[in-house]
Image (cartoon, rainbow, N blue to C red):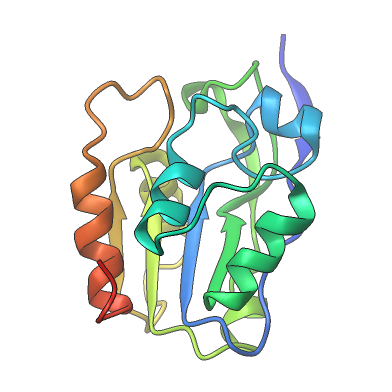
Length: 162
């Protein structure tokens, strides 16, 4: 059975140069009320590691890290019906108002975390006007996630880092 769920508010400020869009929060993320709440998800390990920092556990520390590093974070699906955490069960969705971030921040690039995020993004924002790239999902369900692909993509946006 699916329930109608709402996603999280975006994290961004006037210095956000990169926008990372996931699909929709998992059950574990919804439980902790913040992005990538499943400790098996590689997202935070990859991001903090790229900048040579220790992964922080608190939501406040993660939010501060994102803003300090010029990264905006949101999900492309703002509201939907979903069964558990499975992207394949997302139905009757409302897309996030990506323009809200793009009009307030100098976003140079958009990363899409996985193929579901890419599919919804392309369908909803066919003429976004900002370069975007689909990266392997950091979900623990994606056993073929190559962290080096993320690192290379991050290095293009943040040259001079690892």
